[in-house]
Image 1 (tube, rainbow, N blue to C red):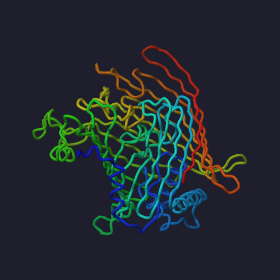
Image 2: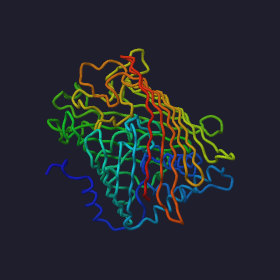
Image 3: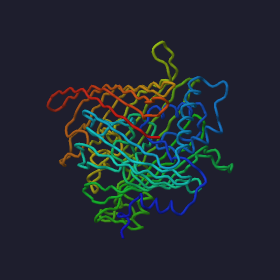
Image 4: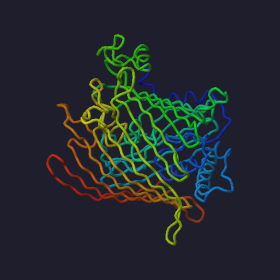
Length: 506
């Protein structure tokens, strides 16, 4: 039997059956929760959370270990104490969630196919979800089915969010279909975001991000890794292509987080899938002309990324700088033809008669034209490949930045988290998508076949629902305005969009 027909979930279930339990917790905090991400980042910047936190999902175990080892002192700010209390409540809920736990979700959205951010919002007009999770001590699993209306990829029923996982020592082995977000950006990741539907994959990652004990490596600080091997099972130019991703992140200084990432598309019909091709891929020998590599044996399409987040590099204030750079090619043995993202964020505390809580503002910019920093960028290059002609996309969406290639974006976003967990999110964004001419190929751009100028304004609100002491889930609602101008035809279009969703989950 070929490996591609082996379900990732089935493999993890098999692994889980071989091990008995000693620890108890749902494996991860999933991407998409803006309020939780804000709280975790507040604690990381205060030195309470020492683990790397710019890639999601984050194992709950590493957050629990940090909160236990480094609780905020008496001099901690009200913001830090509030974030500590809210994250601790979430941890307690997760730890109590033994046995079978049902989950459900109802969501409706008008014009849902906008450019996504870290925030989890409906992907389709209507979504109905139901499932159950089971948490043992070393083993956890979730089965989740979602029915959707008018989907882009014609898949009306999905198993997105399903997984099976087992803790092996200080590692989590899992198989499933879960979202991932790798990078410090809030409105995009150049290498791996939640823009596309999740790729079915096996993964191995560190559970607790402790530092090396040896003096020779302890300077690296708390560190972690994530290894993902997935199956691109959609309709592609090269059918049954496979996906490989590796991210290693560390915090050598309390205020500095660094990460290196490599991803690749390889294998598939009529492409080399043997060990030699895999080793060439891992070693970076994937350019024609290198060590006998030609069009017949070229192993795959690779990307490499580096990202940095630095809290308050100058002066002692509540701000941070972050950047991410992704290389589309290699020259003289080094990554080249970069696309880039950079941002700044500030945060603090608001106390007023009408509204109070912890706030965060961010200003973020990104450009996905290769060599955008030169006078003549390379259009129609990033996220493209002459063999894997479907490109760095899955089910019609870019795996990397949600504006796809040849785009420019400037966004201003904000979040306010109240003490009881209610949150407000705002976003003002200008985007120019699909610059340059498509080089005679069928249009594959996932946002637009034409060059567009887009202006978006959005606000969303989420709050827990409780009645007579019972937890009734979370309600979320949002409203947005969009302006679209076709650069070629000068056509203009305005639309008002919104979403409403109810989620009942742990």
